[in-house]
View 1 (cartoon, helix red, strand yellow):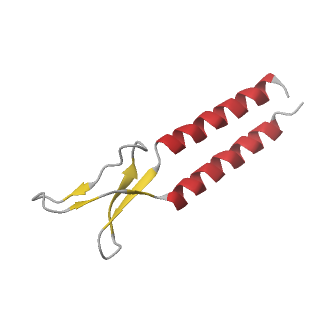
View 2 (cartoon, helix red, strand yellow):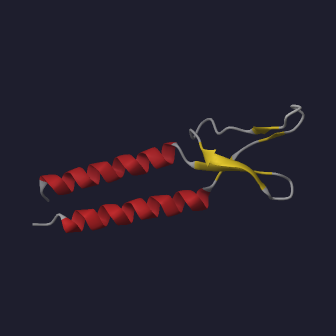
Length: 86
């Protein structure tokens, strides 16, 4: 393993770590319709609060999108690792 391959592994690990700490979230209403989505800190996902403040719906982590993102990052990392072989 050369220095460039080590750098690719470290960068890939950092990107996957950031993806896990700031996952995609989604807020669904009672009819399972997406009200709000985005990215947020893992320990503090933003809830949806109605304009009059009577309805508060908590956000949930969008696990399927997170897995797709992590898989794509790992594929790119492996391809870059293999491309940098001597």
